[in-house]
Image 1 (cartoon, rainbow, N blue to C red):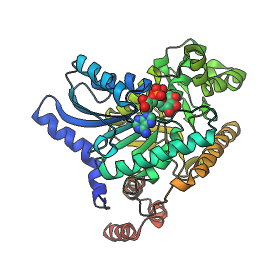
Image 2: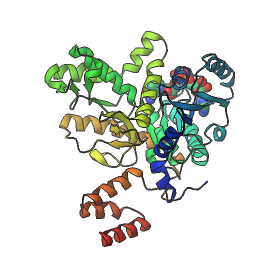
Image 3: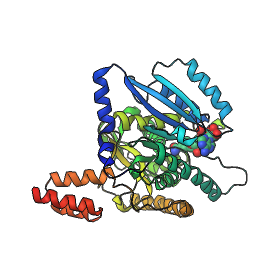
Amino acid sequence: MLRTAASNAMRLGASRATRALSTKNADLLPPLKVAVTGAAGQIGYALVMRIASGEMLGKDQLIDLNLIETEAGMSPLRGVMMELEDGAFPLLSSVTATSDLNKGFGDINYAMLVGASPRGPGMERSDLMAANAKIFAEQGKALNTSAAVNAKVLVVGNPANTNALVASENAPDMWEEQFIAMTRLDQSRAQALLAEKAGADVKDVDRVIIWGNHSASQYPDLSHARIGGKWAKSIVKDDKWIKDEFIPRVQKRGAEVISARGASSAASAASAALDTVRDLHLGSGDAWQSNAVVSDGGYGIHKGLWYSVPTICKGDSHFRRVQRLPIDDFSAKMMTATEKELIEERDAVRHLLPGHESKPVSWNVLESLQTSFEEGDMKAVDEIAKELPAQFKKGVKTAKAAA
Ligand code: NAX
């Protein structure tokens, strides 16, 4: 199905409109469709139970759950299905198990792409990247064909940032902003570590930022963090701890869990995935949430990479980037290092990036255009319009003439 510019308008308001309409007619909202890939894996197993319980989309939201696995994963998936049945979750309208991507992604509102190829014996990092890029290219194509027009896609499977780039590039009719790679677990880890150091409650810690890649090159940044509304650095007063302990520990927390548990993070990863989609769908006020999203060139980061930045989620299923934060020299160096790794990853999978010049203009760009217009900042309007296709330039000209 080819989606045209006209469908952009539908993308903006669809979920809100559905919600308003249905709340009027019934206590429970009509089902939203959620797809989870790798549903029989350890993260998937923890995740689907909590989605079914209503923790992700709200206690008034019915859910159709589509569980996607490989052929080999079908047998354990049957067990997961039985457990979902045995949970007798009142919000669960239907559960479908499939290895057919178009069926699994058919009309979905949210896709959580957890399944990925694990590192096999003797596999180099580049082999793993290539194997996964192939999986996410296929999934991007299927999402493009089958998902609902305003679907949002959370990529959890590693290398998450580059997998999101590959999936988006293979979904020519979807906005780049419909794809997010998960760095929420890194943010939660950083918040918990800071709370422990300060002897504070984790709920009082905010504005911790994860910049860049979900890998050991990520930059967990406390420059803007607060504890109980006060600048965290003025409470902790220990730059050495931040540089020598906090940053490396967050970067390598995954390995620390593996060495203690003998398996990689699963329950906390499922929790972070759930938090990410819950905030997109229901909102988290003005809180900053780190998400790896397509770079719009902000903070000097190469456009088109999936790079983690602070975002705000108002609950309309979109995110807004927190813009123009002051960046000190140390942070700039750390941000560039993780950007470099993402460029290398992108270059390693170039053959799977078709490059779609006709991708729809992103919702965030249209929102910036609208805001600048409303604020009467015509210089900004002209700057944004410069990069837009002809029909938008024409629209701006008409709107300016009528203003
Ligand atoms: P598991 O190996 O337990 O489960 C993966 C599941 O995915 C398996 O059941 C497998 O059959 C399935 N699968 C593989 N290829 C598939 C495909 N093409 N379509 C559908 N299903 C497929 O791994 P798990 O511990 O659940 O981790 C899943 C992914 O999350 C891994 O790539 C892991 O590295 C990544 N992580 C990402 C995190 C993040 O913060 N972004 C943190 C946790 C985790 O490490």
